[in-house]
Image (tube, rainbow, N blue to C red; front, side, top):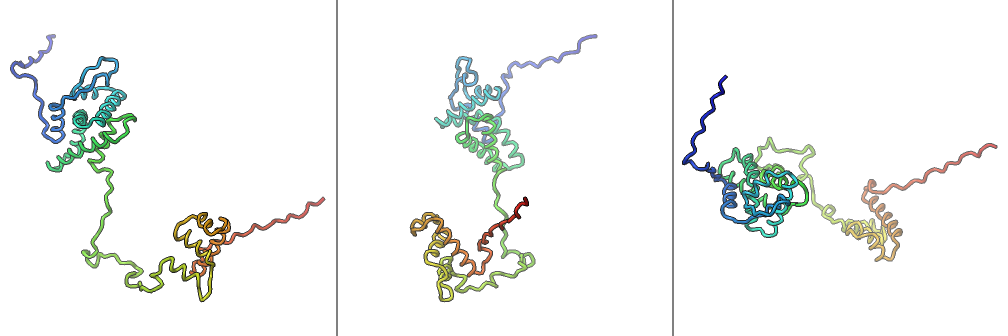
Length: 286
């Protein structure tokens, strides 16, 4: 049986190497700057410590890092991030160039249905957030590069952004859609008077002298005022009043019970502890 006919390869004479299609997006222009403008290099032994150090431009470093296994990739990115943190400038551009393939893929997801203006803004945001992550995140944990790009994608996409709750202009709503309380309008039912304009300090002073007589002592009023109203510690106030802390606690408790009774707030009074009944067992018969 004759062998199948093999296609004749097309001659390549005069065509030269295939030309790389230019990426005219924001990230593409950043990568082009990193590829053509900067001359920074990293030694190859960052990736493979057993080889003699060879200077790697951005494109070569990116190629080696993309093919390296996880721990080696972490070590290479850790070295690049530490260098960028120390020197900034063109090293930030070098880092963006190395991260370009992943950032470009993320941009494709976020800009599939966007107009050119908003799409360009997404590219800028990805680049900026990647650099923020590069200079902010912990470099000692594994999967460093995925964490850097994931942080950039999270902020650029707004997937964890806290959106404010919707608000409505009640004046613009028709009368039939304005919510009404079944308990009436509190603004119409409220009446200002001297009692409900008092401060808590005024109420306390009024209750200390009730119906012409003093209800609690000045010491007890001071304990209530300074601990409950002013927020001072009981120990500090007791020391100023030359009282032991247990004695101050008992006096404050009595005063609080009296005030709750005068206000008609029996729910605020502490229940009096009841003593357990003593059980008297009959003597054993002998």
